[in-house]
Length: 230
Image (cartoon, rainbow, N blue to C red; front, side, top):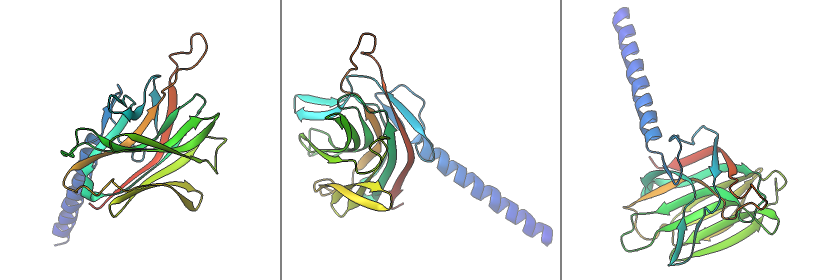
């Protein structure tokens, strides 16, 4: 009887281990790169550095100027399951509009002929890194907030949270969560479609100086977390 119980426990352990491994493998395979030639990897429990080439951005100032050329590592989830996404981002921000952070997009909304998206992170402007958020329904609008913590190191922890039909963007400063932006259209157009969630880096402006015009921007991401209902 003892041997039977032991064998059953071993079978249960092997089954649970296999199921856990299968789930992890499935989750890993769901991540994809856009505009970047690298091996696919999940940012969960990983430290990832994206080297963004110059002349890249995510920005739509007009319908005829729709730029989504930045390297973007993302996964697809059901919109109704999204709760929050969080990441810590760091780089040597030094050139105008150097940037990196989180992006969420809504690619399956059939009522629109354009892509809706939100990006949030660090952006370099006016000689310093700021906390930048862009909400793009039809056209992009941009907001900036000062970095009250770690402005010298260029570190920031950014979070996008669903609250009903709204998306709230926060920066985490120690034990404090400071609100940066409320996007009211994010989740008010139905939940049946999927959304893309991930990290990005962009370098819209080239470096000055001979031989540096093609320098890339290295943006490092860590402590990525994605919370869903299931």
